[in-house]
Length: 560
Image (tube, rainbow, N blue to C red; front, side, top):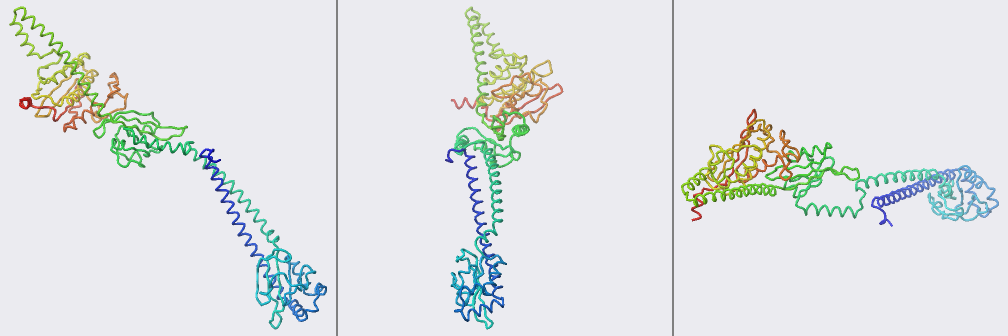
């Protein structure tokens, strides 16, 4: 029957049964103890009355006289005798059920029923006739009673009879009837209080379990365990008061947390951007999505406040590792730029070969030779790069040329620094073009939004052994907050002064620099802001990439 009820109602019924059982047991115990106490009181009263009657001088003399000549004591004579009169007077005065007096043989000399006079008492008088006192609860001719038996002594000290005084069961129960009524009232009040408490607890339980049944709670626990351990994303849950209640292994590893459970979120070493987002959520701000660089990884984080039936359940944080994806996107972008550059180069090369072929076919070899010498001096393609001939490394040449075409479309001139010189061959092309591409994109954006009418960026590239040094300067307004330049911002929050730059939903704004720095540091290099600029001067970024360049002569020897 209980199984058909909801979990909260089952708990209500069970709690009510427990309350009723406890109250019933308590009432029964108290009633039993109260009855025993009333019996003891009645027996004590009977003993005191019996002692008082046994000490009466006239009664003692009359009992002694009757004991000396028991043959003369018949019922009629005893009914009018002094012993009967004295005993009945005491019974009436004290309200006892009976006051019975016997001689030394146990024959009644006084009894409430005169017809019983001269007969032997129905209960054993041996203890009293032997000189002892006795109290008990026994059944006699007048029913159950609390009684006391006391010996009557003659002047010479011999036992000449006994006095038995008793109070009936009805009088004992009547004495506790008021207490029982109070007990029942207290029990009823306790039952009502228990019912109210049970209703409150049941409602509280229903709120705590969100109205879910045990089977649903068990299924949710299983699902939670499966989700937290079976997915590749980090999940962290916070209670409404800001304590960590859930943190799976993936989240702990990505955020660098060791023992997060039970700790306030303010005590944890979290990325500044995430800590600020959690603080905003606690203050009622909307859900947040952000990308941050943390412990050498690029993390995409969703933080949301969760409600159910209007009840605040806390905050759920989902952490995804997008480092590899973002690196691949950056490298794919670099490869795409190089592919476009090579396509343009191929088309231009084909056109120039047609020119050379035409000059030779028309018998003008000297003109063809001069044309080829010009190509060698200017480079393979006429990219809009000032001093482009200084950058001779093929991969970097093609990549910068492709980026220069894109920058030219936005009115930005690309320059190669006069100190540029790369004598080796790029072997870590993906890392190099990813970092350089990000620096160029940021520099172009800064030049476009800068106040200067001359829009340009300048690139210096140097190699030293296996290390490649990159320097990128621009004509923008500089970096207003050097401390925050490598910090990621929530999606959709462009840098101050760059509101016209479209929000890149794939890579995010403010993430590339941090990712590029992490990428450089993995190989032992670094990326830093050498000059924040300002006052009419743009920013200067420097990158040092280790292990991305190899000496061309060494590579030739290895091939041989």
